[in-house]
Length: 509
Image 1: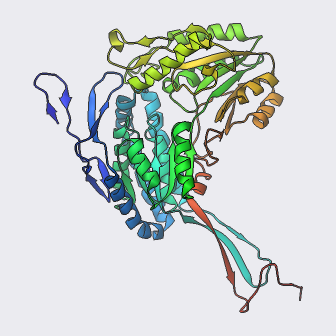
Image 2: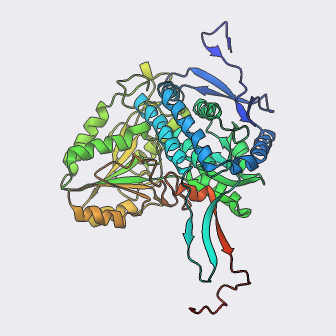
């Protein structure tokens, strides 16, 4: 790095941040770089390469060359390496969280939780190294043994977003590795440091050279090159539904395995019998946690007409009182958006909500760019009162914006909740066990919460949604093993003669 004599800012040269074949290397495209800046202060943190197709080819080749040895390495021993990485993450949790807050903005409690999720994921899949269970079953023929086993897929391309820059890569890397695959990770350009720190931990834990590779760059170049690459057998993508559909199309043309975790327009129902204080805490956390930049964020709150006035007034009051600022400040409750582009996207939706949807703005709706907010990408917590068909109630905003919708009955609430093209997460606050059970049955979501907000997944349960939220695969838990492995049916015939299934007449002796 060097310091500009005319400015106080320190300037960084792009480091050898691609990790290919067990070595940290410069991109072959040395002239194109991107900056990593703190979204709260504008501080330059680091500079990374905009990698080329040649870099992708090198990374995929390294992954392919290491596949044979890694897939034959005992799964239990693979798990031991994962366990070592878990311990390293635990030791570095505080510093990793601080680095994550600096580069993507969310408050320290949340980035600590992000690192903890990677820790939990490593722990969980390390245990799978001594399971990876298949099935043994009976055969319809005598003297014949039948079973099923999991086999690795091959080279996996992992394309991850910036809002959970360590948790989501861990959701993909750890199950892929425990199944015997090798990987190439392309992280989001807004959070390059967190991806590098995770790969450094895996390297130190003893993951062999070439098993994990890291390549930086734009989605339309590096991401597409990975999805297109003939040696990549699987693409796991987390991001917007628009980009995800293109990834799915690319993979579909060549019958490449593909896992898509996409958008959401999640709703929280507040019934008239709800614990309103509890529902209020859930709504605040669901709507404004991570500055609303979660696929599971609470974007709509469906409130029974009997409690609408009381609940909406309390929510507006609490939203106005949220402390906004630099996430490194322990007193701050909501940090900045990740970039100016994201802030402009949020503001466009807000302006549309006010002018075209004609929703009633209850609080917020303004960019914060003066005083302590001058150098960051801050936005006011925003609450609208609106209707289910409005654009702001149908499209994913990915910011601190929530729409309140009045409902008259439980049946109407379920109907409104389901009336979007997404189906990730849904929540209901009620003391009625019958309503709770019907919600579990009737919500068109991959995740359903009872008396809890729409955010807060745990790593041993499947994560994902229905409709345009994804293509049916799940992350986390044992279901993640299904995308990162192939089932093989095995038959062992020890009869000593040719037996023909479905064509033999077998009689008791």
